Length: 187
Image (cartoon, rainbow, N blue to C red; front, side, top):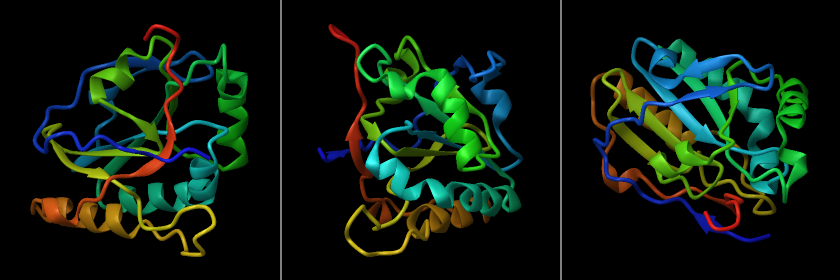
């Protein structure tokens, strides 16, 4: 399995404005998804071993962030021509299997992933209530096969700091690691 690190986008970057469909074709505009204290945007997909490794924890992550006033949105941007297991129909099945209580959106054009400078799955971007990036990087140190439990420690620590009005320190932000986003040919 290939290991691709996330791109460490500059902190303070404004969240790109985008509108994407979920598997039921309901449209979601990202800025309107923001909670009282912020929004976590994560790039995931259905087949990546790194995502499958953390998938059972995503409902808990949502619940912990919701308690802090932070909402969650997930986006899949993989090319379904080469990876049909990541199609919107399969996204709905994945969301049901892992009881994802947040919108799981499909970026068919891949323009949203490019505007975020997303590189891998999973890739996490935490924005404050003003839609400014305060954290980007890993969920925690757990990876498939390293026997470390999935705790969400790094992301949750940053979310708690942000919810208190503090800026999570850049030195505590490590790149996420996962499968590369499956870009369309010529993209």
